Length: 384
Ligand SMILES: [Fe+2]
Image 1 (tube, rainbow, N blue to C red):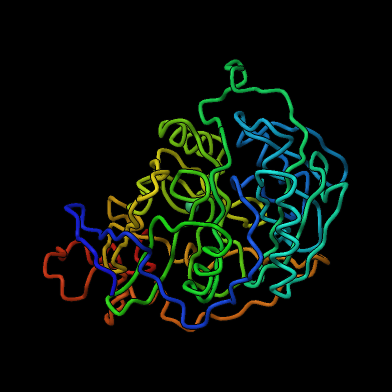
Image 2: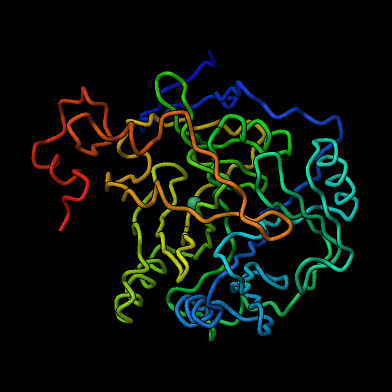
């Protein structure tokens, strides 16, 4: 067992990620592509006009380009063509999670890496979307549609255009979050792809419920959440400050659109970031996220949370709504067909955090400190 130290904040730190895969994906002999960062997501939506309204009129994203089939969107500090594509289609789903790589040669490395793994690989010199050149799309060994690109169109840098900022301005794409049945298998594969684990959630038996992994020096570029998958849990965009997130809540209230708010606002335990989860018109989950921490030092330790720590998902102890655990978007293969969803067999975080008496308290069942008046609050379906 990896040596771990309990900190005064209640989580543990270790030097190496304490996650071990029983059923790992083979490690290719080919070197992985050098990923710089999570760059954009392509979401299929069923009503393009309605989704455009949500992302542009409500969330304030900038339209770089659009046609009758797709809208190419960016936030104020994104300097390339887009960091979100919404494309019209018959089934709401994720079409691609796209990563920028360091050099054009990394595309050759992506082709070799995934070909060796026996994955479907497609390379298009003209790109799969507008604004992006030569790129590679694959269905990765976990069933997710991943894209890699270097060539892209740079657009006007709007970060200095404070006349365009709204109180809830989104500034960057921060990360993706993927639902997968076997978290350790996913972590091992993404470590082979060059990701480093920054945080995870485990129980006393070592069952891993979720893990956060990074390329850029923040808490993550992607995370894996244990559940039936492959599915997309969410795409997260950053604001500068936490008051920007409160402004988004106020705006949704004022527009009588509060049904788009699923969870939050709040402060995460994991990542220490301030957060809000929204659902778009198709139910795709979008997180608004700000103020996590720097992870770029070579010996940045891994933070491990106990699944029974009721502050891991929300630092203030606010209960997590069940839909946040159960709902997620389908993901597509390279032909645009939804990937079959495989059930998780390890225990679920939702279930282990509900006591046998039906209370969804997230503490160790032996914890005597939970006041009686709190218990009702945690009962599923008990809130008015
Ligand atoms: Fe997130």
